[in-house]
Length: 199
Image (tube, rainbow, N blue to C red; front, top):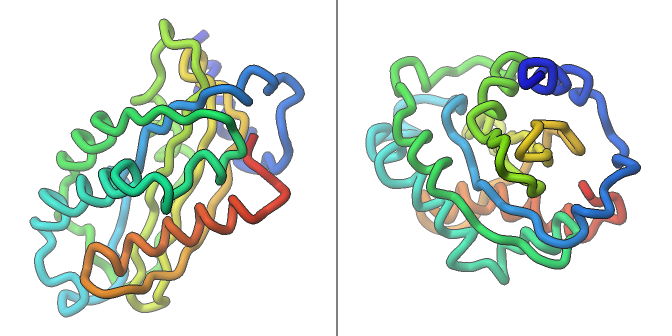
């Protein structure tokens, strides 16, 4: 049954609407954070000069920033829910295990269905009946000055997908951390201002 639920991600790839059974989701959503286990850096070594530090420091720092500055990085407003709880530890731990060999490239890159399903599976917990939200990071693209990411909203117990969509945000600001943090800030801001909420 669990495998069948994971397969639903294939159908959800093109899902743009809302589930008819999402009334329970209008209360609390758990934010699992930014998962960097499949991310690629698009550019050259002059753009990403200290790749080990990105894994060991910035993956955690970008996740923590959303919690520490939750008024600015308004997940609640972006998702259109009343309450958000934050459980980012698993995303941080997983991201720190990212194999950095081959993570830098100059060509295009897009996550496949199998990769998305693999990431989602790591957050499924049959005893947890809440609704979860996770940002699966795809690229930090210095050549195009953008970052791409997949937002997935799902039932944690069953992995049933309520929303799965790719978003792109522009970077900006001073310093490496803030420059790339602006990308998901812009995505969250666009979602907050949009009438088409993920939930």
